[in-house]
Length: 409
Image (cartoon, rainbow, N blue to C red):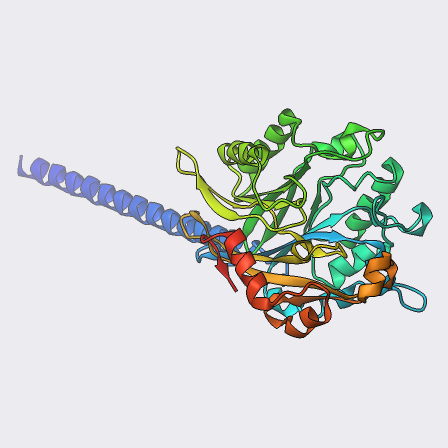
């Protein structure tokens, strides 16, 4: 009887030992699997961070830290006959020189928005200024590589001046120059329904552009984005909102030569804000208008520059020659919360020299020494002009017009 008891006790101990070994083995197995999966997940996450590339430098962007982009914006670039004549060299053109005095003020910007008002289709379509604009191709080249423009609006009333083929030539050439984005003019209806996307410093941007109207009614409607086509506007802005971190909308609108924002502009801004636009850049009036931040009932904020005025032109009124550079900082924090801050405006003066007799005779092509200056540095050029004004007076005009939500530099 005792032998039987000992035998049972031995079996029980063996079963307990085997069970213990099995449990320990399972614990080790699952622990190893967890550590392997965790390391793999961390490795995969690190790889995801590594593929975010800075489009300017090609270097990796750490998605864990705040992502920051600096944006500068300039207004209308108008290749008037005087501008073309002043840009002429022995066998070509040099439009880059006009920006020599101001380029350093936005040299640190990642994005530089510009409105090329009119065509740059070259000699094949006839070089001409107002009222039917077509500049040499060098105009676009110098805006990109000389002035540093890399976000381009082509939605304006002069982009169709010489017909659909000339418009297509301008669009094609801008695409060859490979800026961050070009929007507003289209070769076909398929292109019209595309949002332009690009990425800078780990932030994805959606860019769309619209005009109030097109001077040439004979070209197809798809050639120019018109914002009164609300189905098109809403479709593109909604898509941009859904697929990007920041939505930029260019609007060519307003009443020419008026510093006052029109009811149409106000209505369109309300629509764009409700659709989720983050930044609205306005061009078209050829003079400055106010800047402001508006907020929807749902709390969405939109930074609006109603009009940046002219940057490059040879118009006749001093207010048409006071433009400027809008600056802002765009930040996406570690929680993907967007902020747009450090709003500032640097006024500029578009200079040319003209004698009183030449002005009285209307000899427009006699204007010479065309050049853009930072307004704060324009004392001597203003003294050489016929406008009889001062830096102090024009700075005050810029402050009064832009408003108190922006710092004037």
